[in-house]
Image (cartoon, rainbow, N blue to C red; front, side, top):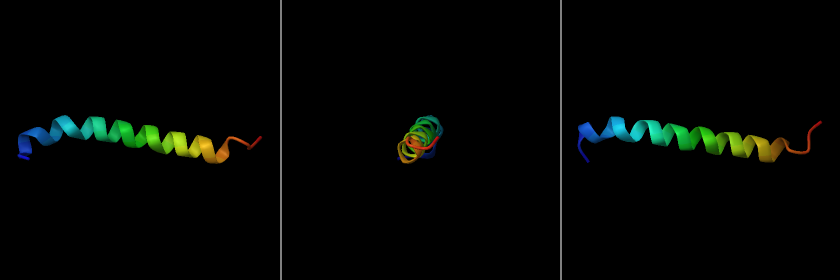
Length: 33
């Protein structure tokens, strides 16, 4: 993989990471009031 492809992958990876973190947080706290 060369450097020119990295910027195109950063945003999708960050998006998926944020989505995963949000889903995990929701799952862990879904029973909280």
